[in-house]
Length: 388
Image (tube, rainbow, N blue to C red; front, side, top):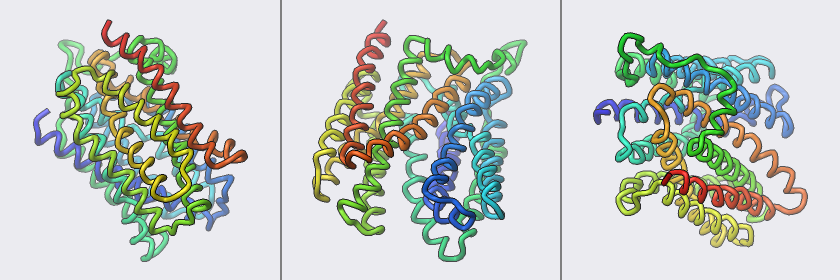
């Protein structure tokens, strides 16, 4: 991919993640106007993830057949419409409909990953996935601050703005982004085979790809388990203000972005992507296990920053490994399956975290460390399979 094309894709990913970063922290406070409470906010979040679980592999497979560019634009237009539905909502049913629509058209991440896979080699693939991950991360870091400022102008204003920037992303995809899916001779883009939901199972049976996807599922579940612990521990135990919590979370997210931009350095020093993943997962386990024993702000912050640093390497390495071992006519489908399992991890993580908080808030961090430990052990298998 030419630098110009990569720059356009990065810009689209930044404004896309910025929209999500703006609205996600406001879902609960905005939804309370329509009767959303502590129990139903979980259902509202799960509605998006479940819809995305089924939709992303379908959208990814369609991008294999019809091209990446139209599917990316459709996904962003769907996101724009869902944000507008939130702004105009008059009932809780409309809120659920908006989140389901966003999940059903939420193939922008997997399609963007497929575009990177299309136009990169094994040598520079991890570097480009690192740039793409940092683009998504940047939007999530600054989005909550932008949403907080806009909410002072009115409760619907952040959703209007998020819809506007999603529309900008869709228009950029339509008019400035070039198609990356190379047409097959005679058969054209339709050379991709018809999608079946059995792919959600059969893909996991693929030696390297299946292991990488399951590791990603575990590490995503660990991260979203940690987020519940982070929120409750910082409020109930550390007694931090909203401002300090925001600063601490921003620092945690920023460390991941910094590490993602350092991916080229790591791939030059260590040639095996699986080995880089193994070492970073080990560091994440140690940091999370250590965090479970912390009780003051300084030690808690140290654990979170170390975890944030090495967790930032996860997606670039896993996505590069998956793409390296995939075929060109299934990049979108397999990346969609990968995103499907990530969305389930985002749902199961908070649910299991909520269950263990009945014993102790520290148990949340130990549970997250347990998920990371399983992923770490599976990484040995991934390393062996990658070599073979």
